[in-house]
Amino acid sequence: MSAKAESGNTQKSRNNGGDSQAGGHTEKLLHPGAEAPDFTLNSTPDQTVSLSEFRGQPVILAFYPADWSPVCGDQMALYNEILPEFRKLGAELLGISVDGTWCHAAFKDARGLQFPLLSDFEPKGKVCRMYGAYRDDDGMAERALFVIDKDGTIAWSYCSPVGVNPGADGILSALEELHEPAEKEGA
Amino acid sequence: MSNGQLKPPVNEKDHRTGPADAPVTLVEYGDYECPHCARAHPIITEVRRRLGDNLSFVYRNFPLREAHPQAEHAAEAAEWAGDSGKFWEMHDALFEHRSDGPGWLDDDRLLRYASDLELDAADLERALIEERYHPRVRGDFMSGVRSGVNGTPTFFINGQRYDGAWELPELLDALEGAGAAR
Image 1 (cartoon, helix red, strand yellow):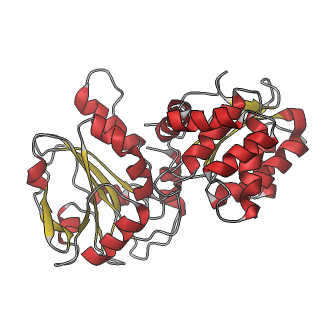
Image 2 (image 1 turned 60 degrees about the vertical axis):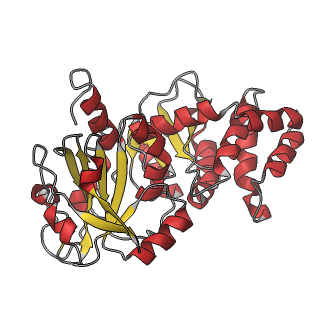
């Protein structure tokens, strides 16, 4: 993991719920080897996306706390930029937060995001909880990443401190590992 | 995973100021349209002035094109100027003309900056249309991604990502701590 993420995990103390120790967040996430729970969420007010639609190709799930992060190098903007590399590796990217579909629509439009943002809005946080990626203390998603292989098994997961953008290197390494497991270093 | 290590290390393809054997090398991944990078620019300039030959500074491109639609062409313009030995002159112009107000990175402004540097603006225009320098810029960008860059500006000191504050006193302290005495 990145030094930035590790130092952030121990130094940041904005979490009120007491589980902000290093590794504490990641502990509760679904781990590699687990079957990725299927779900259906709205991507727009009148369209839904199901995880099972993507069986046969890798999927990246990027849970994030909220739309409208106030920094320009934010996580979703970065992933938008790296989308061609994700797709070269055969993967689709799904962003997930507890924001409603109209909020997602405005955010997606404002940032020019080229991938679906799913709304885990009602019942709130249900899918986040299924993946161990819900923050009870503030009612938002963790900044949690999952790479799911073509058979629907979690290949890699990572939870970043909520204030730290985890970047994309871990995702790319995990996707490369799915392509050529013998040659690349592990995640 | 990167562990905050610069990949690839600084090499002959990089734009560098200061001596190659300086005790400290500072690398910035930046975006010419990013307001934070614009704020960092005069700080870096001052750091370079104060540390002189004890510091080598390298700039790599990390344009977030969707958020900053003019950052890519700006980066390509700097690379283009670099082929005529004027990378740093263009680099400075791209940040400093921000004070002109909105539109300072419009294509016609980029051409004007080229003319100001006595370079062939018509060739820059062709280069932008042909995306001649896009592979170079994208290469910088992906090297940043693999080095754990997640936003701009991101700094590396002697190859290790620097996550501390980059106001002048903090950055000077960090660089001096890494071996660059004033």
